[in-house]
Length: 288
Image (cartoon, rainbow, N blue to C red; front, side):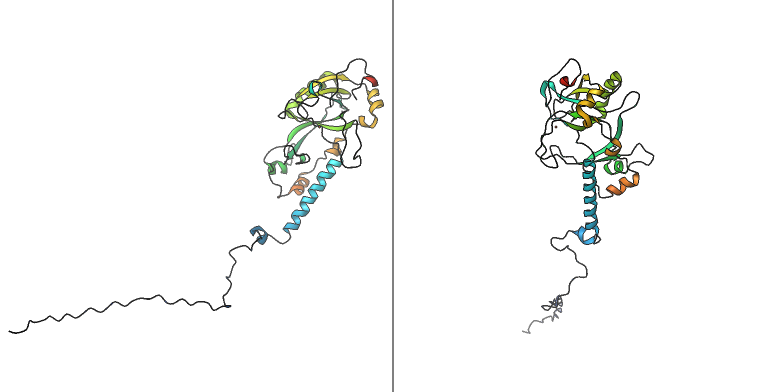
């Protein structure tokens, strides 16, 4: 028998195997640094790298200048009157107003910016004049995003004794002190009635009451006590009876002065009453 016929099948060629080119590893010590650093060096914020070299020094100078200005301002004026909630109890805190204003003249009014105050932290915060009532506008209004507060300022005598912890009178008990009495907008009508009734604030003895910490720092209730004659005021209190010079305590700056003072770096940061008394007004019947 003849052998079977086989078909010859030519095998297909195998596909070539593709291989990735071998990576060439850098030789030790020959690695090149990237053209631009992608991360800030440890401990150096990005802002410090991109800011001009003298920005930090300029910022420090600006802060120190503002601190000195605030210190000078405080040195040229008495402390502001402040009372704690409930202080004086039912007797309140007795004050004597020494302002010279007499009807029809007006007491001292102004707009004031106050910012950065921390509740319970004495000495915190800053303040400066608001000049929104002028023709130039106010740079601080723009910076803080709000207008200054309208205030009436009076000078009062405060009979609460205190002992300073530092300064020229450190350790010395002060029996009577002169204070700035800052009356905010909501309280002004109460004092307006007293002013119109008695035609002057000079020699007016009042009692202030503050029930809670939501009330104004000067108190939310005022009661008239009596008027003290001018001759008694001068004889008893002498230089203490001279009111504060408000033009020196609150000098009005120009727009450029305010802008230069605070500049672009200013962020939006966001004090024993006595018993009542009556009778003739002589030295023996004065509250302190």
